[in-house]
Image (spheres, rainbow, N blue to C red):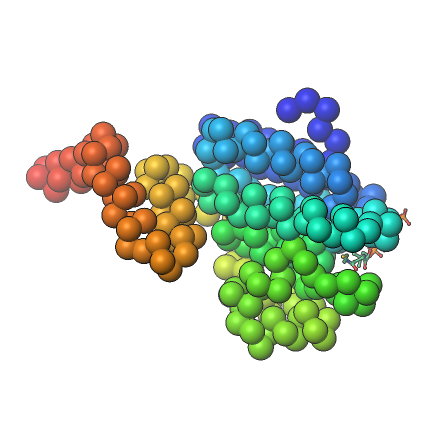
Length: 247
Ligand code: COA
């Protein structure tokens, strides 16, 4: 990718690893980072691959960039700058894994909530201190977080500023697993390997149908399965299973 300033993008055939890289500002999410994340999304929409999102220097992200936020107006609020990019990330065709170490606060936490999976470290500190800055958490914490951890804990976090440790996030299943910081990325890759072992099209359809609203079921399943039942990969995988058993 050309002239990427706030991200480091590492490519593999089946995945991209995107490292948030504004360590001087504790990876605060500024407009430039948002723009660069949109460019990553554009690539992954064209060429679906797993996305691993991670931080740097022991910090995932300290939130939206407060220096920019302070001067934003009602017009900016209505543009939903962070909510839009996080929803685009959540809707990527293949699964998204957030590997979160250290601070994941405010918009940083909401970026992690937008992922399909979160893996963390014991020193993770995740939460939403927005009301302390005189704003609401408008990029997912008020609807994704209750879905992820249930309303009682979500309310402690968004109304009373509770910041979860890694152990607490694991107990709440907000993160699926904890690793020592030096092992975090390997842990994320191991999860990506498990996803990548399956048929990518079946994985994409599973993600899309999971996200479909109730009224679209079971039609969404029917349509997806109709495509997959005709796919050469389904035939190949099932034949391989049957032939293995015959041996
Ligand atoms: N936006 C803009 N700049 C930020 C930032 C943010 N969200 N978080 C940290 N920074 C900047 C600091 O202003 C400082 O910049 P400077 O070196 O030019 O003075 C630099 O990053 C280092 O921050 P500092 O507070 O010294 O680091 P720390 O390691 O002691 O603490 C945090 C890290 C994350 C606990 C602390 O920076 C913090 O509380 N940040 C704000 C968290 C927040 O309220 N997020 C919600 C935003 S909606």
